[in-house]
Length: 180
Image 1 (cartoon, rainbow, N blue to C red):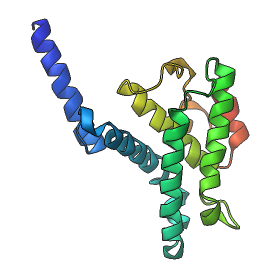
Image 2: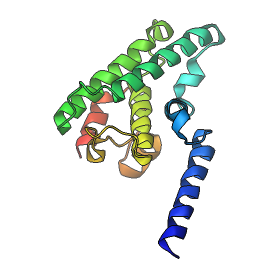
Image 3: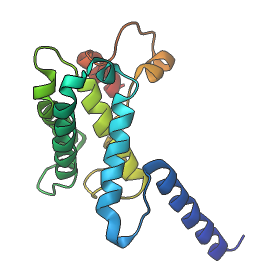
Image 4: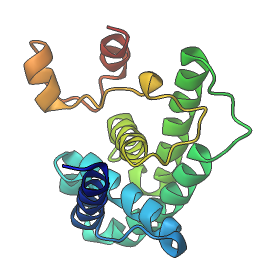
């Protein structure tokens, strides 16, 4: 295969991936749509299999949607904030933890008395958004792939360690697993 054929095939595979996975096309005038769809896909990854959709009631749907919109805007602003220091693993981790806290804060009206949208939801949402952006070469230069956290969920835990119980509320265990 010639370099030209390889490049053409690679471009076609990238376009296929973006369209099938993120439901959009990559072109100069829709970069924001692509980013929005990446954040939406990451949100679905973070909430579709967990307790969030189980616990969310019809009465809270409007608040949940508003929280999703606010958190989406926040995530984009946080990822593309060039004033944030993420030059070391320590500064990246500090930014990451603070950003997850801000995401959860967007859901205060939904969470009310009990924690429905958890740190586990926030970390997986942010993790997957960063991974997808990295995969497409859309991360800022100060966010290096070796600093990204592994999205740890029950499937990973089943393979990695002997684990019993729900994941979302085990922040300290998560932090320990990230360091290994």
